[in-house]
Length: 239
Ligand code: GTP
Ligand code: MG
Image (cartoon, rainbow, N blue to C red; front, side, top):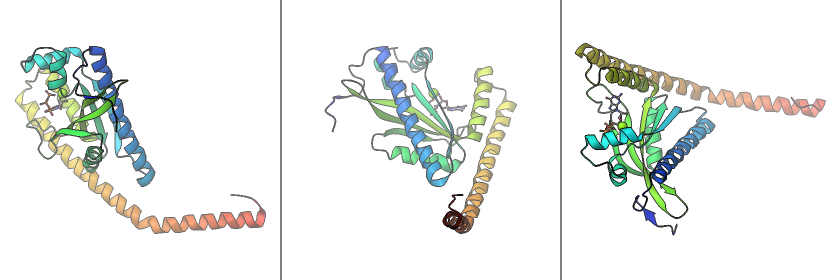
C-alpha cells in the first residue's frame, strides 16, 4: 500500500498543477487503452480501437461552463463541477467493442467509475449516440496522490462521423438549426444505427467463417513446418 496522502485536489491550488494532473490522467487512460488494443491484436488478430483523441478543455470554456451553471470561477469549483476538463474519445470499429472496452476499463482496480451515460441504448433527442463514462484514475506526484477525473466517450466510427457533422451544424446555427436540418440529421442517425448493425453482423459472419477455417489453417502450418524440417534434414538448408 502507498503511504502517500490521498487527496481529492484539496491542497492542489495552482493552475499549473491542476493541468499537469489532467494531462497525466489522459496519458494514463490513453496507455491503458493502447495496451488493450495491443493485447487484442496479439490474441485475436484484430484492433477494436480505430483511434483515440484526447484534449484538455480550454480555460475559456471551463469558465463559460461554470458561469452557465451559476458557479464562481475558482479552482475548487472547476475540479468539483466540471467533469470534462480531461476528455478522451475512443473510436471503435464495431458497436460490440464499445461495451467490451467500457467493461474492461471499469473492472481495472485503479479506475473508479463515477457515472455512466449510455446514449447508445438511450440516444439523445437529436439522435446523438455514444457511451460516456466519468472515471477517476490515481495520479502520483512527488508527495501526493490525486484521484483525477476523465470523461471517456466511446463510439463507433459511424457515430463519430455523425456527431462531428451535427456539432458543426449546431455551431453554425448557434444551437438553433432549422427544423428540416434537425429532422434530416435524426434520419441520418437512424441510418448510422442500421449501418453499425449491418457491419457488426457482417463481422460476426466473417469471424465464424475464419473459425471454421482454423483447423485447416493449423493443418497447413503443421505441414509447412514438417516440410521445412525435412528440407533442413536432407539438404541442410532452412526454408
Ligand atoms: P456538456 O455540458 O455539453 O459537457 O454536457 P453534460 O455535462 O450534460 O454531459 P453529456 O454527457 O450530455 O455530454 C457530454 C459531451 O457529449 C458534450 O460535451 C459533447 O462532446 C457530447 N455530446 C452530448 N450531446 C451531444 C449532441 O447532441 N451532439 C453532439 N455532437 N455531441 C454531443
Ligand atoms: Mg463536454
